[in-house]
Every structure is written in C-alpha cells, then in structure tokens.
Length: 512
Image 1: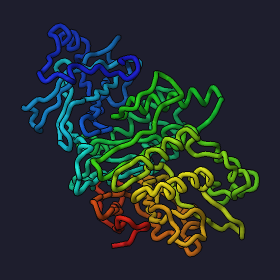
Image 2 (image 1 turned 30 degrees about the vertical axis):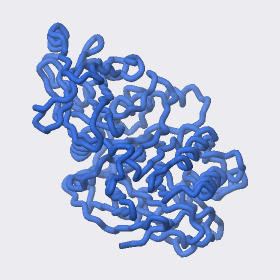
Image 3 (image 1 turned 45 degrees about the horizontal axis):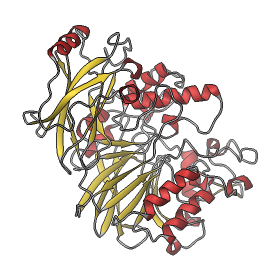
Image 4 (image 1 turned 90 degrees about the horizontal axis):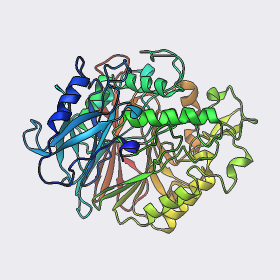
C-alpha cells in the first residue's frame, strides 16, 4: 500500500519487462534536474528464498533536506542476474512519497533461491550506483554450509566503521544488524555528530541517519550485501510510555529508521508503534527468530533507589525484589508465546535467537554487594526462565543466542542462574562486539573482575571492535570474532582474533 510503505510493486509477478510510460519519464526528468538524486546510494535487505527489498532515498544532497519535488516522484528500478545489468529479470516503477522523505522500498518477489542479483534505480537522466544482493536457500533445501555476519553498535563519534570492509571476502549471505545503527547525544570524539543534541524530531532523526550513511565502509557494505536489521535503544528509544512527547519522539525515530533502512518492516507515518519481530529461515539448516526487545518490555529502571549511581556510570544496578516478579517480561507475553512457537515448531537443524541484549546471567560485585546489568535479560529473569524452559521441554535442536549491546565479545553457556554448572546450560550464546562503540574501563573492569565467579563464561574481550562471522553446517556452528586493529582513522585492518565451535547436539562452545 503506497501510503503505508512507499512501495509501488509494478509487474513483480509478470515474466516480461514492464517499461515506465514516456510521459512519466519526462515529468520526472523535468522535476529533478540539476542534482544527483542518489546521494545515499542503494541498499537491500530482508531477503527470503524468493524475495528481497531494494532501497534508495532521493535527496538533493547528503545534508540538504529541501523536498526534491512538490509531490511523489516516480523512480525506475531494475533487477538483473549479472553485474553489467544486461540480463534484466525484473523492472518497474516505485513511487517515492514526500511524507516518507522520498525513500523507495521495493519488495521484489518471484526470485530464484540462493542467488546473487544486481539492481539499480533511475530518475530522469540520473542513475544510482549498482547494488548487489542475494536470496536465501529454498525451504526444502538441505543446505550443507551457510554463512552470515552479525554486527551492532556503530557510534559515529567513537570511530570509523571500517570493520565492514573486513567482510568483503567472507561470502556472507546477509548482515544481521542487532541495533544501535545510530546514536543520540553528541559529545565529540574521533568525529562529531552534526549536532550535540540528541535527535527528537523527524527532521533531526533524518539528519542523524543521513550523517551515518556517509561512512564509506558502511555504504560499501549496504551496496554489496543485504541487511536484516532490528531496532535497539538508540534507534527506537525507550519503551512502554504514555508520555505524549516521548511517543512523538519515538514515532520520529521509527519513521526515520524506516526511511533510511532497506527493510520490509513498515511504519505508518509518525506512528509510535512498529511491528518488528520476524523470523528468517535458511533451508532446513537454520531458523533465526528475531524478537522485539524494546517496544513491550517492562521498565529496567525499577531498582534505582538501592543502587550506587556512581558505579559504572550507573549502568550496573543492585537487583531488587521487583525484577523477580513473575509477570515481568522483556518481550511482553504475546511475543513470548510467538517466540516459543517459532522455537518449538522448528524442524531446522539449528535454532537461533537474535537478541539485541545479552541473555546470559552475569553477577558482579561492588563493595560486597551484588550488581547486574538490568537492561539486559538479567533484569527479566522470569521472562528468560520461561524461554529457557520452553527450549528445554521442547527439546529445541541446537539453540543459539546471538546478541550485542555491550560492545564486547563474549561466549557463554546460558544457565538459568549464576552458580549453575555449565553442564546444566540450556543454550549457547555468542555476544558480538561493536562496530565502533567503546566499552570503557569503568564498565569493562567489573565484568572482567567477576569472571572467576561466572564459570559459564568461556571468553570475554571488551577491548576490540569488529563483528561476528557465523558459519553453519549440518554438524557444526563456527563463530569467528573478527576484530579491527584501529577505528580512529580510515583504513583499519580486520583479522580473526578468536574462533569458537559448537558441535551439533551439544551445548557450549569450544575455542579452536
């Protein structure tokens, strides 16, 4: 529906080529002369076995937000089976609507499974760069090997995003982005935000996303691989609220995220609600469930009174009785039921949860008192317990948690509580470090000091930036921690700093 998704699918089911009418071509060319309308290049996302979303956003320049036209603009799109764009498979017209910032989302369907495709857009006499994308293996396929990358937390001011360039030889099918695509308050650093003020309006969120899209390595990644992205706190803000001002701010954040992301997720114009949870199926090898960990969670700020606000910047808190209430949920009960069904009904060899925050329980000490990171699943132990119980009782095959948020690499066996033997663990978790966001020493030291009392953790590295490369076969899941030597200037080099393997039928990862 054009008003909801800014997508006009033209001839997607047709086998032949469909051309843009001549009069539309002329009108478009006349309305957008004098500038290149593709300063944000192109991107693709949310692949399935037979479809993928291709994206662009029309603008006068990176930092010029004057509308490109008085009304909707027709953009030609073309998808081909070769990088020279000679063997055209699909083409049509998509309408870039002004109320969605002239963004274009085309859900191209009817594609072959597990194939690379190339695409671009044209408006008037201007053509966009050519992007490459890829579909997933067919549902009935017995995939022998599948690879994808996991990223999160790219803070503009903390450094350059060149870890993305380390993916160029990975042959990854997609990039799973677990949130914090943008950041809020500007404090300065390696490079500065366009404003020190945290975005609050749609115009301000658009400007922040536009800035992040200028990072060269991020742009190259979007041009060559599809992204599957989920929103976290810096993208979507906090949480269950009735405050009209906060709802307006969240609506602006959702809309700007949608306008700048190659996502099949849709948002009504300036709505504070957005359907985020979804699943990804890779043949019969992998089911990846991606819940929404922000929109429906109970507040994690329930234990402020008894906590030391000076300890670890106030990020870690002393748990209070309220967090153990049975009804507290990270996901909201309807979404818990959805996740349980996705896990229990799966016939896949491996079953992963893409969680924006760490599921592993972790206890820390501060002046003899117990502290935890209550913004992660440690703030929702009843909710976590219900999910772990369903995994155990349903005998879910090879459960894996993939998460980010803490700007550190971490590998663990997910037990129900600290002190349980790793042999009692229900699933394996890989936490990926950030693309550029720092985890400063006041946050890293309490975790590092607590490792001897958290025996279910096998690896912790808060110092390095990068991403995770996951390779899945019938018998093994391998996660490589890919880290970059520096982010303070362009040109950082990425290498594998540690690798871990999970054998099918076992819980827990072994370093290799």
